Length: 613
View: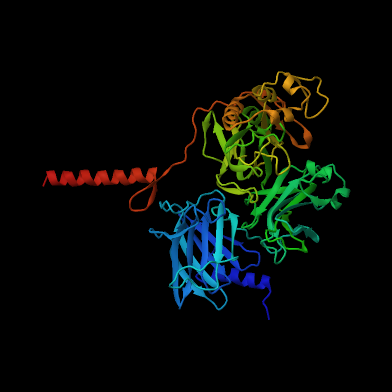
């Protein structure tokens, strides 16, 4: 009799924790049938993996720059004739596989249990091997493959369709998620949502928070993935919506980002929770919780689920969602979520055909000064960050400045993947003080596009946002900016618009070539080139900005609408580079200085001994 998939998964997870006493902080199912699972944990400069794959042949696992086979770092292992093996490989730009002359993966064990191959191995995050990919806090494109047969004397046999790719974040800090068994919870789950036979579907459903007689704290949120859909459900986002809506919106389930979606969806902007495949849910710090039960707390929420169906399976329905654990034992601090970056608007413009384009959104000193001095002069403490852009996004940074000097990055992702988004825990909490300023910096590519890309809600539009999860909660919902539109239009030669403005997008009056065009049509009419695009990019980053400094419920701080110049940066923060020695070890600059100082000291001691002997 065939073993149920869920039971098999639980047994394999138990095996991952009991085979050698090692506890793995993260796990993910990589294929659609639950046959390929990876568990991992990192400590210091080393990361350890356990692969559990339903095959008695070879198993392949690797890291790719884009999810494809070319220019990838790959390890292949298994058990052949009772003997374990593991080899380090790489591919060139033509996908040709080579054995790496520098073997940087250490095999802990390789076992077979009659149905599965289990491989445990480790490697350094920085191997100092040009054929290996460095593992960082950024998103990692994992590639995988397996075959029914081992490599054999003739070499690797092509894996056929037993292959795939998945984006994961491998270095998210590991958190203890244990709660008392009696902790109450409630669920937000979809009910028989039909999944179209297409690659990507975003489904949005409205829910209402439970009615409580007093204040409670949500302390943990975890995914509830329908059995067998572990690879279908790619990420889940939970947004706070307009508190003044009615229960009629609870019937509102619809494809997200669709022209016919309910208007209420447009009010759901603040991200309360984000999960992506490979994540284990989100647990709040022991002194912090998300407040529910009060009249000022979130009442209506929208759950967005991204379904990934690359094999175009038909007839699927899904009942996945999330579970929220809450407690009447209120913790010391309420959690808040601050949205910062570029105000979502058509005034955020990216020219077509650009291999690289950078946008900056400012949480200005003026906004933080007013809000924090009125609400919390001693500052707020950030413990997690979600970085957000759309399909053109390639990299995002959340930068922190104090008195003109840049502090270490709050968060970054140099390999951003729109289809993989979740809150990143910070290794240490960061304090934001009055007078600080924060910048969300986004890198885009529009090489395949022939028209302008605009700021907007559609996935074809763009955003540049960071969501900071912090405590204690203050009355600051958004701290953002937008470049002045007049200066942007001046770049293409616009001289005058029709006033008063009675339509949107507004209409241009002169020069003649743009007469009666909307400003969006005028920008698309302009003959863009990469050179003009780079010049425009440099100009926009120096333009004056319009401050957006919003409270909850649509109220505003006094600095809202103020026009300011981008902050002057006295000093930028540079991450310490790793120095690779010929011994194939990576050292950062402090370690290298220590080593050189020690060697010099030994030299002088030895020299002094020789002179006096």
